[in-house]
Image (cartoon, rainbow, N blue to C red):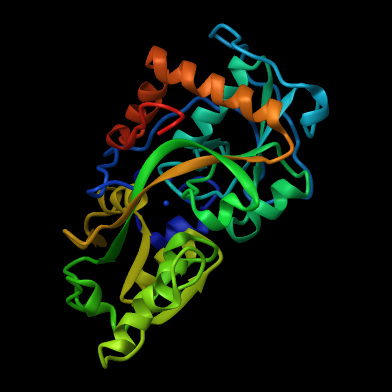
Length: 321
């Protein structure tokens, strides 16, 4: 979301390293994906996107978008929370890459647009879209009832929720009940945070922490983090017993750092679709993005992109999935 030499180095070099799911943790590539740069974006979020030309489209243009529905005419501006590998992260040159970024770039190509990536904190990413910081969101967002109240979402990927633990699983986490009384890291704004706390689409009684209390056990010590990389660092330094994240992300980290981390086997929760978010008023943009994505699915380009990052098992077969 690259082979890394340790999480401390990984966090110190977030601009060049890493940054919601399937029935099993998705295997990740054993070596860092090498993607051609598509746009130069600073590793930190900036007040406004800085569009940069990308290579000329190699695919037939399948649609167009009215300039009035674009933040910057001639560009498709994408909000994405980086890092969150393998779906979005920075390559060795500091350029955004990953399966989400490549999908967004190809959508832009098929709409005859250049692409710009706006690095955006996940907890405020829908607000950024509503505030005209970007045209669409591609950032491993689970499709939820709560989010659909604010935006329209086009299904484009499938994922579940998994737990990353330190190598050897020192706290013996095998089931959700084993989380009771322990510190669990999670990224703010994610469905995993909602699942722990019983918020969003989860009823209060359905929260994992509330279930611990109902069973007469200690509640989960939920530790929220602004960035995915911060949660992983907390896990390595034993400040949390587990990191609750999307299955593709969990799989990627554990394959890239097998001596540091592992996924709790068999503990996969809530398989759901992820969606590309579009403002509800931008119906022409939504239709065009949907057409471009479906054309990618139909001609195999979509699966080729996912395969490049080792997440093809989580492909959808239609934008109506």
